[in-house]
Amino acid sequence: MSRYHDHSTREVGQEDDARSDFWQIPTDWPVLDADHVHLWRVDLNQTDDLVARYSRVLVPDEEYRAGRFRFERHKRRFVVGRAILRQVLGRYLNLSPAHVAFGYGPKGKPFVDHSTDHLIRFNLSHTEELMVLAVSLNREMGVDVEFMRPISDIDQLADHCFSEK
Image 1 (tube, rainbow, N blue to C red):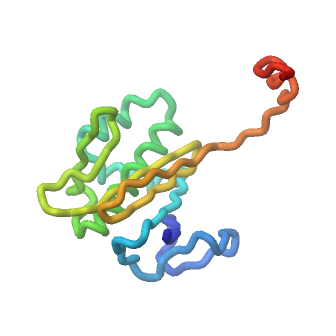
Image 2 (image 1 turned 30 degrees about the vertical axis):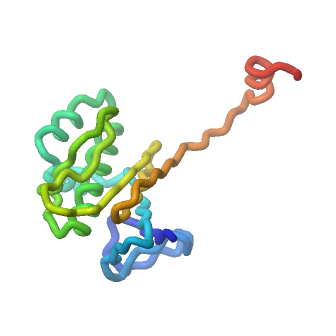
C-alpha cells in the first residue's frame, strides 16, 4: 500500500484547489511503517529565495555537482531536488538535512548510509520540473516519471522506425 504526499513551498495544511485529491499535503509528518511506501511529489521549479535557502543544505560534493551543470535551470532543479531529498529523509531519520549521509552503489544509485540500524530505503525519479520520491522501511522499490511531450510527426516517426509487418 502507498501513501501519497506533496512537498511544496506552502505551509503544511495549507490547501490548494488546483491539486488533485490523490496527492495530499500532510497536516502532520506521516509515520512510516513496514506495510507502506510513501510517495512524495516535488515541484523543482522554485523561487530564487528558496533555491538559495535550499543550497545551504547541500554538502560540498553536492555543491560541486550543482556547479557542473551547464544550464542554470538544471542546476536549480538539482539543488531543489537534493535539498528536499535531504529534508524528507532527515525527518524520517530524525536528523538535520545536512547530516543525512549517502552511499552509492556500483552503478551510482544513492542509498542512506548510516552506521545505525536505519532501515530507510528510497528511490527517486525526476523529469523536467517534477521529482517523485518513494520512501519505505527495509523494502527496495522503484519509481519512475517521464515528461510526455507531444510528437507532431508521429506518422513519419512510425514509418521510419517500424516495418509494415
